[in-house]
Amino acid sequence: MDKIDKKIYDVVIIGAGPAGLAAGSYAGRARLDTLIIEKEKDGGQIVITAEIENYPGSIEHETGPSLVERMANQAKHFGAEKVYDTIVDVELEGDVKRLVGKNGEYLAKTVIIATGASPKPIGCKGEKELIGKGVSYCATCDGAFFEDFEIFVVGGGDSAVEEAMYLTKFGRKVTIIHRRDELRAAKSIQEKAFANPKMAFMWDTVVEELKGDGVLESMVVKNVKTGELKEIVADEEDGTFGVFVFIGFDPQSALFEGKVEMERGYILTDDDMKTNIPGVFAAGDIRKKSLRQVVTAAADGAIAAVQAGHYIENM
Amino acid sequence: MLEVTKETFEAEVLGAEGYVFVDFYGDGCVPCAALMPFVHEMADKYGDKLKFTSLNTTKARRLAIGQKVLGLPVMAIYKNGEKVEEVVKEDATKENIENMIKKYI
Image 1 (cartoon, each protein chain N blue to C red):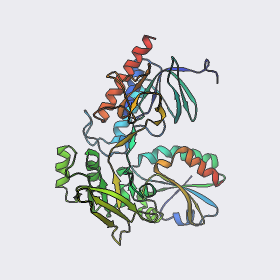
Image 2 (cartoon, rainbow over the protein chains, first blue to last red):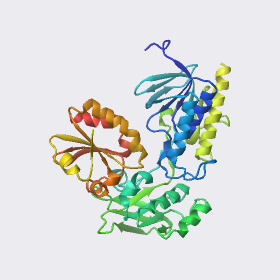
Image 3 (tube, chains in turn cyan, red):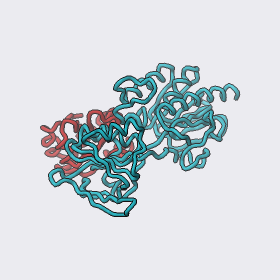
Image 4 (tube, each protein chain N blue to C red):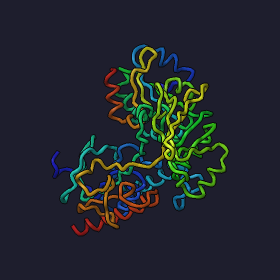
């Protein structure tokens, strides 16, 4: 298709998580021709969480999906278009940026990279084979399978503790396995966790290996202080148990390697969300930053959109 | 596309002739809901060559576990009562799902 005939958007946003959706709202509202490209589902990481209580202004019993639905509707209301496609290649230099998707090609004056992050796996032996067979990174998707079974949650931050508490609705016992001797989670969350009779804690422990024939049947854990190894085997009657992993996220930036400045996979930007490439911005968890939350992602999106507008004015 | 239940799974999937596609999903599984429209598209496109079914595992937990499904989403192909192939979770991309379907039509 001839480049001259194709529509050139003012702003193309890669990713429809909170960063991308906020950018879409701000760009659309500024009457910029805006397109959001999403590869899988709106909302990114937070749609798999059952409750969000710390997003400023979130309503009571706010869920990830309910918040995202409002953000998506808002972006649509302000005129941002959205398409579902997976971007496989990008050309970010020059006045017209080119994004190659599986279903089409997109041209834009500015690009906002808001591709976010994906759950970090433990990285231990046997983990990959047992995903969906006892190992999960999504409590809302898979908690129900482990009703009345034992559940283990790996991690010690807010996500791990919150998801562990959500999982007490299903498991008869939920044990947090954390490599340190104290949780990183916010104090208020910790208090609730310690007070929950279904919760147990394995401190100074990491998972070394996950084992099972077709389903998770046992795991080997290690005490990081003593080096002692211990095998935990599924209850004979249950036959299996759940291991939910919440130890952080890996940035989804492989597509941009060598094309924008990054550090350990996170895209480097200034306070205005500008990358080292003119007309290319980054927003949300993909950026190098100190706090990765819905609220900071949304803020980044808004800033990036406004900056994209300024850039276009000055072209 | 046929919605099967724990009552009808045996007859409609395990006991069926030829290959059967099963979309294992659940209430509150957002990634599953996101894929559903695409699966329906696949059913429209290939439904004359492959039997398409879906199972809500929230209402059929033991059945799902018995089929070694303990995580969602799972898209599977069955033949003669056996699961011959499946794509699970992150691997259940639109591309992988369609490529898997094409193998059995």
